Length: 69
Length: 136
Image 1: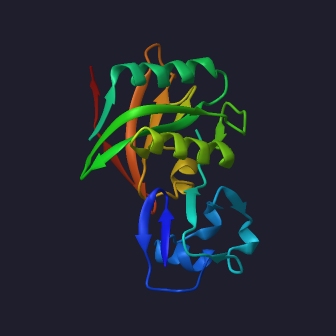
Image 2: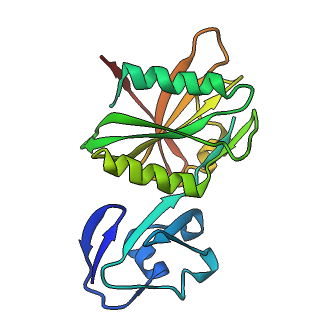
């Protein structure tokens, strides 16, 4: 499967992937701490397991950023 | 090593001062080659916590910054925030919430008369100082 992940063209051997699968492959250890967009649409965190990533999709993910002094 | 052009270095300090008494936050974009990171863009973001002691990013603004960084030939390489009244070192909360292993965390302290800017890599609770070179 060909995808664009955070701006980089990537090829995956898998033919079916959920958002959770993809985050695992991208070594994201805490998927609850990332926001995901597929083709500019936000994916709700409870839907990561059931949302499929499709051939040619552009997937962006970014970690939660926060803190305090 | 983080290389930051003087103009962008000044811009992030100006952002920190502008948002007082609250913490300011944002990204710096640029390129990374090995351990050398060259900053070429500044993306001030809204502190959704609007607090003098906490900061949080707006996910929609985060993705907009990601796309803007890409359009400028780079990616997001630094997350910065300000400490209006405490030193430029990561707090326990900063360390606990530093989830991105691939980004540099930069802190602007306005606790003293002159701003102090320091950068860190934070992975799984381990903090390592990262040197900064301000370039002309």
